[in-house]
Length: 486
Ligand code: NAD
Image (cartoon, rainbow, N blue to C red):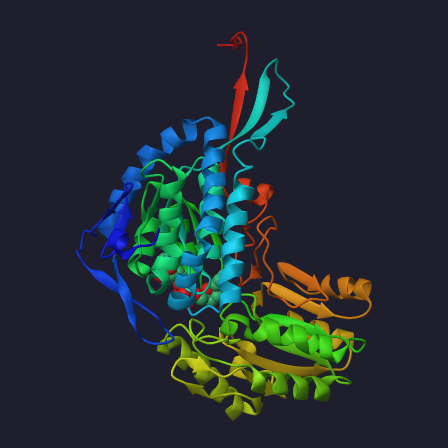
C-alpha cells in the first residue's frame, strides 16, 4: 500500500499522485539512523490553490451522496488501517522513531476514529425549533465546505485522522498538510487508505509542505475551517490569519501538564505512572507530564525511584532493538531539549538522572528541586524530561498546578478519588485524569485544552465533531407566503 513507486517525489492532488508545481522534494529521513528512506514531493502555495479548486468541486458531489455511502467509505477506511497495520507501523517506527507499542496504539486509534466517524453521516443533523409564525423552523447542520487539516510531526497518524475522518464523514472535502518530517506516516498513509476505501477523487488531498503551505491554506478563500495541531507559537499565527480571513480555526496547541501526587498516594504506583507520562514517545507528546508536583512526605522517595527507573530505561533504535525510548525527531528538537535541561541546572535544579545524549538518543532525565523559574519547568520541553517540585498543602498544590500559560491535561494521584475530583475543579485544564497520568486518548472523547493549549475547541465524539466541522443554517418553510403591510 505504501510502495514508494506510488508517492516518490509526488503529492496527492485531485485524486492523483503528481509532481508538485515547484518540482521540488523533501528527503524522508529515519531519525534513528539518518538513513534516507525516500523522497516526497514538496508542495507549495500554488499547489494549495489548485487543491482548493479541486476540493470545492469534489465536496458538493461528496456531500450529496446518500449518507450510507459516506458511512461505508469510513468503515472501509477503518478496516484498511487494521488490514495494513504491519506496513503502516513499520513506517511509523522508522520515520517517526516511535516504539512499536506507540505505533500500534496510533493505528488502533486511527481505525477507531474512522469507525466513530462512520456514525456521523446518519447522526441527526439539526433541531426543530419553536416559531412564532405558522411555519416549520429548523436549525440544520450543513458541511462547512473545504476543511484544512495541519498536523505536527510527533503523532502524525492520530493528529491527522482525528480531524480528517470526521470532517470527511460530515460531507466536507479535506486538504491535509502533514509535517514534512513525517509526511509518509502522516500523509501518504491517509491518502492511500482513503483511495483504497473508495473516497471520490479530490475529496481528500495531501500536501506535504512547510509553514508557507500552512499559511496559504489559512488565507485561501475556499478553505472555510482550519483544524490545526502544533505549537502555540504557530497556532497564534494561524489564529491571527484565520481571524483576518474570517474563517474558523480549531487550535490544538502545546502543553506543560501537571501531575499531582498527594500525600496518601502509593509512591511506586505514582512513579510507574509518572515515568510513562514523562518518557513515553520520548516525551514528544502534547500531554506529556512536564511538571511533577509531589507532596513533601513522598518527595525524596519519588525522586529517587523515578531517577532509578529513568537510569534503567533502554534508549535506542526502535526498528532493531527492544527499547523504551526511540530517537528525538531531529537535531533541532534535541538541541532545544538539551538547552532547557542545561539552563535548568544553571538555574539551580539538581540533575537526578539523564541530561546526556548520543546522536538523537536523549536519556530520560529527572530534574529535582526545580526552581519555579527553571526553563524546563516553566516551558514545554517536548522531550523526556521530568521536573519535580514539592508542595506541603493542597492550596499550594493548586497554585503550582494552575500557574503557567498552558492547560491541556492534568493527572492527580490519591487514594481518595473524590478529593482528587474536588482538587481538579480548582485547576484550569481541558482534560483531567484522576489516578492516572496525563497521556490518554480515545476516539470518542472530546480532546482539547484551555489557555495557551488551545481555543478550547474539541476533536472527538459526535457532538464535538459536528460542532467543529459543520455550519448551522436556519431554515423556515411555510405552506403559503405571508402578507406584509406594504
Ligand atoms: P509546529 O507548530 O512547528 O508545526 C505544526 C504544523 O504546523 C506543521 O505541519 C508545520 O509545518 C505547520 N506550521 C508551522 N508554522 C505554520 C504557520 N505559520 N502557519 C500554518 N502552519 C504552520 O509544531 P511541531 O514542533 O511540529 O509540534 C510540536 C508541537 O505541537 C508541541 O508544541 C506540541 O505540544 C503540539 N501538539 C499539540 C497537540 C494537541 O492536541 N494539543 C498534539 C500534538 C502536538
